[in-house]
Picture 1 (spheres, helix red, strand yellow):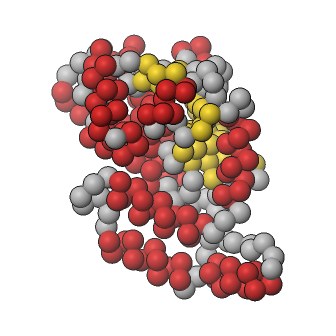
Picture 2: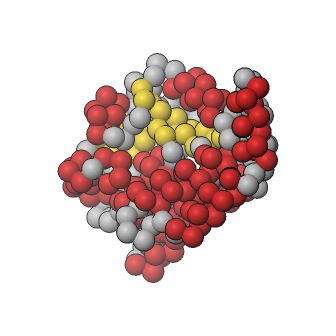
Picture 3: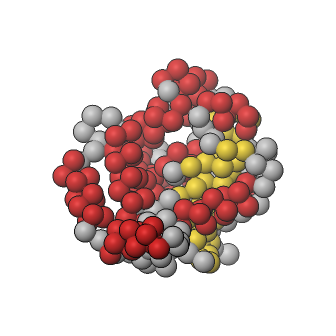
Length: 257
């Protein structure tokens, strides 16, 4: 069986971590494969939005620690490992399309790292989120700490990283780790992404780039690239279609061009 499953339907791709017997622990090979998958979505015109989920009861318990003796035993190996993790989260965050993490069960450590890189996090009432790096003597990577800070604020980020505690869904939402809680998070995710998939792709791509860049602090946003995104949208067929649809009182048909 594949460790990662990708399925596409009606403009929405579903990426599922598929190691339920290991509570979807993420191996080094999976970090690298996820980076490739999300990078390829950028040029896939048939994909307008993406769901990231876990098969079985859990989203992910995080990195597969059982392989650390062989692949993350010292600072050199750890640096190589962090490059793979950052490439994965970077591919998710840089993708100019909306991505939602649908969380049930455990979302810990590297699993939380994946969820933080997404645009939204929808959980069900079984969701439990935490970052246990302080129990492993691991310092969480800079980019992930910045994403955590942007979502939770400095006091909550310190509490999460210092304590290594696990937070149930309601508390996680109050801290900014979860955006919405639903009895059926998968259904809520699909409905929300279906709405977003009907909107102008260039608008979403531009907004995502700017908001992600601004949230990463000083130097996180390339103003020249941001202006280019504004200009491309302003000169696009989608902008003309949006104006025509508004005038004709009908739903626009956006093509991302």
